[in-house]
Image 1 (cartoon, helix red, strand yellow):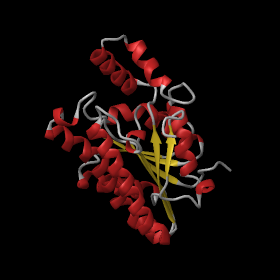
Image 2 (tube, rainbow, N blue to C red):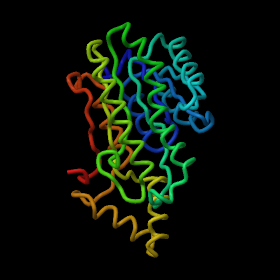
Image 3 (cartoon, one colour):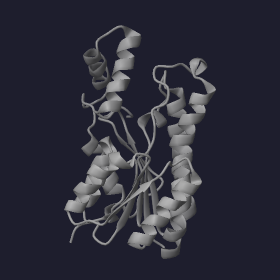
Image 4 (cartoon, rainbow, N blue to C red):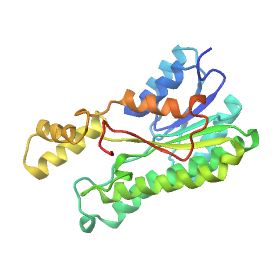
Length: 260
């Protein structure tokens, strides 16, 4: 029997990068999937991969900052699959890059806080009543190591990920009595398009090559390497499994050894 057989996982931001890797991990593990995001066309290829394994997959268009769309996505999952056992909040954004606090525009600050904090709050708000009723559930929020240490030039993003940790920990205290685990997986830099954008912006500001900017990031980590999507997916799958049954309210850094 596969680890997630007979379980239903709702994943936000499942189309690309670590979201797609997480989706594939749950599909490989036997879970039925509710895949929620703004770009349905981008989600369909990874949904088709899961269907090819024989998994039930529901694709729901959802802007996680809108309560009505979040509630509709959860309702669609429950209607098709019966319940939501696992919630994984991957959807999020980067915010302003290489931008000081005083250079950050108010609207940019508001946008990233709404996406990275409010989005997770809304999905938990919609999914938790069913979990509480069944006295069972796992929630994994994808945070970031800039929410464990401050980062110059990334104030807005850092603030949003610090805030997500507060949401995670407070909710874990509230729902522990209902046998529900709530944790936060905190990736460092993850190789992929977003890391390329961050490296390109650093290269521009410092007047160096993109390759040199990538190398600078790697040199900051104890293991001297940048994480992959699969590294993050493995941590999320662990936190969503029964192997983590007695872990809640915690932050798990997947960063090659930056936050030590």
